[in-house]
Image (cartoon, rainbow, N blue to C red):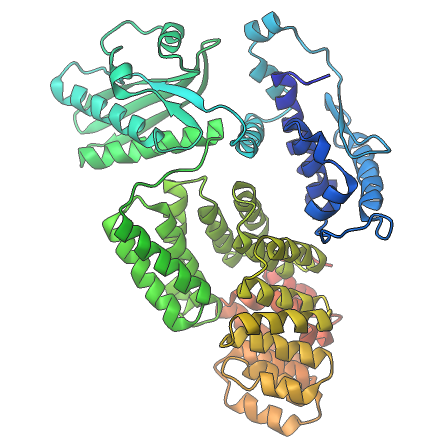
Length: 595
């Protein structure tokens, strides 16, 4: 029997609750499995919930997957049933929606403990409030937003009308400001995919008329109405705005903006942006269509291309290009995200001092998020910012949000994989990189990052293959050569390792290789010429078996703000310190979990 709308929302809210539970939030594989089957069922795609489809889409198997030879889906389905049972016997024992996976298939089933109200009851009793009873209001909003975004292409646009804000001071200046702010809100809403915004002409027909939201909604055929007021008192300004659902006259969201009167047009723009972005988060719609001119957009694309190529010169040129875009169009959020990304990459490899780059990175990332909180790139770069602050949980949420908003962006999977690697969750990191490869199979960057993670997973043969693929796609990449050299170390192919690690930037790994191959004197020479590079000294001292100086160099990395300080702990080159009694204190310093 098909679910009605309130049941669908309740299931989505319950899914959100289950995925946030202790048993699921650290189990990416089962979380992805559960999310896939529930969301496909709610989208009416039960015909896609077949073993082969699940194997390919969820577990990264190849298109020629044969269930007779690989039982991954059946095995994980059994684990999922057990994990759901464990959840409902503990954290979820009072929940009123039960998600089940019946044996013999992959289509989920749902049980509702409370009797579902009839249609008249739903209208009278505000069903969205009933659903919110077992959850915090913000959790429900997030769940509804996520569900709406997932189905953005298959559902009809949300119709919305903005009635003229009321000027509570009856003077022309205040009325002009109120009308201008109304215009700005209409204009900014009109460039959001998934929203059908009623025109200014239609909305202003209700100016100076008594307000009846249901009547306005019926006449304008709008599902939602935005209304509000503007009050000026001397140099102070107060704007109140609320979103009302027409069908039951329910206020779903409201906000108040108190500002000093300085630049009237700047205030209009700031408040309009805030209102629109809050509405997007509440309604779950959607992607912004930017209206910048072609020259500005081409400059932005050049900056993105140079950022993806890495290298100090490319990144510094990209920063100049993004700043040009921002100067010409200060509302273009992707340019701020690109700027933050470029600063982050420069500081990650110490091509710019962290104390210089990271404040600029933070400002740009926060501005991108402020301008467009549903921009995937903005959420991704905020994840990079949180990583540098060692706020690992918050960073993980940002990366997951970026992936939710754009499941086809390999950069988000790569950066998330880097975070997981730093947390020591190497298998999960590897899963994310396999998804990245599936979304972008010809990207040299993805092959490089996959090789990087495979080395930490000690899969040296596969790592070498992906490093070579990256080199074939981008022959001048020093990182691909470095990862190939590291894989050769793991394979004990010393001369090949020396050859690949002989370039600039790989001195630490070369010193490690010399030491492990019995050429300690050459390793010591590299120590002498790399004293200002603690990240290189860590590796050379580890190769020489000097644990004391290895920890000293690690502490220097932390003091220098080197974001790689956590990730280094997963390197096979640092296996000698894994059981050292000083390691727990070092992990605490970085806010890392103990293993």
